[in-house]
Structures are given as C-alpha cells and as structure tokens.
Image (cartoon, rainbow, N blue to C red; front, side):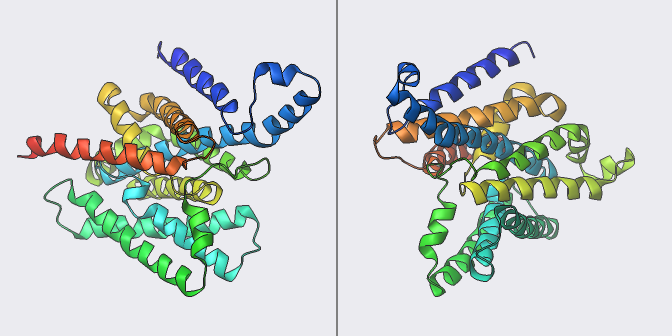
Length: 320
C-alpha cells in the first residue's frame, strides 16, 4: 500500500489536467484574469468539473463491476460489455424512451438497472446449463447474448424512429455532461464502497458455491448482492454517458497480475486504475482530432479490443 498514495496523487494530477483540456482555452492565468476569468470559472463549474467527476466515478464503478462479475462467473474474460449487461441496460433505456420519456433521471436509471439485472441473471443461468470446456466460451456466450439483445433494441429503435436518440444514449460520450446531469453517478460511488465492504464475501464466493457454502457463506445472497451492484453501476453509467466497453476487463486483469485476487487488497487499486484509464482515454479523444472529440467509448473500444486479443493469445498456449 506504500505505492497507493503516489498512484492517488498521479490520478489527481490527471484529473486536474483534464480540467484544462477542451475546445475552450483555459489556463490558470485565464482563471485569475478579469472579465475573461469570470467566463472561465463559469465553464469550469458548469462543464469541466462535472465532466471530470463523471469520468472518475464511471471509470472506478465500471472497473469494480467488472471485477465482481469475474469473481461470480469465475472467468477472467467476463465484464458488463461481454456478458450482455450493458446491452440489457440499453434495452431498458429504449423502453423508457418509448413508454415514459419524461421520467426523472433516477427513475430511468432504476429501469435500466432492472433490465441489466435481468440480462445478467440470464447470462449466469445460461452458464450453469452449458458445459464449458474452455474459458473462452464464457465471454463468447455473453457476446452472443448481447448481440441478440442489441439486435432487438436496434429493431424497436428503428421501428419507432429512435435510432438517433439511442445512438446519443449509448455512444460513451462525456461531452454533454454538465452540472445537474451527472449526479446519478454518485450512486456508483456508493455501490463501489458497498463492494469494498463485502469484498471478503465476494472473494470466498469466487471459489465456488460448494466451497463457500462449506465455509458458512450464503452463496445466493452474495451473488444477488453482486448482481445488484453490477446492474446499478452499469445503469448509472449508461444513463449518464452511454456504454464504456472493456474497463472491467482491462483493469481487474492488470491489477490481478500484479497483486493477486484478494479483493480487500485489490479493490482500491482497481477503482483508482479504472478512473485513471478513463481520464487518459478521454483526454486522448479530446486531443487527437482537436477541436473535435472522439467519444471515450470509441477509444476504450480500441484499447480494450487489443487487450482482449492479447489475453486470448496468452491463454491459448496454456490451454494447449
């Protein structure tokens, strides 16, 4: 833990740097100047600070959610974007747009969370019924399930002329995050803290139902708690910015390679690393094609795909 404080300071430095990256030019001298300073402070308070906080909360929450999913499914390739969870949350958002578009944001999140919970439960139910001869089959089943759900979502969005609206909801873009439009992500922070409190239970549950039951742990309750945390974190991120793929795949695997699988020890590192990864990807998206922005979801998609392929290639020789 001696390195945690320097890592925390490095992430804080990334957060400060994020405040000064964007279309509107902003520097410390601008903030301290006269008339221009007033406008700069307005941009900082209304846009830059909420966006940076949203990036940190979303990154930390999705990294922890991916870790919980990997423990519950006992598979290193599983996370919300490879298990049908984010696609189910998107289907929930479509249901809200169709049936009750004027619902407050918190209610939209709860509906999306209910759909995400149902989709994740279906995924785990399929895993119990399918003989898994290779760990690679688990994310393959999740990707197939997500593809089916996404196809249904696209069909109904096309049928009711909501494709553009759904694209805006699921692009993984933080450019529209403003004060008053990101606060639901504090739910993700609360659930991340709850995951840390229950970290030892998730660690034991990850050893299998029989083993955890013999130790006196109610395996079903722990799995249920994990599914609720994963679903609500995913829903809060989807409602705020859209789909952020592969965070829960990249970060837990990297941290596990260095520190092992004891969640009580690794969860703070996972949350911090997830926040740092999203901050870096967001700044890359803002700088590569400035003054235009590439959505952070697109940057994460490229980075995560390469990392996923690397995991598969590293795994294959061992399986052989």
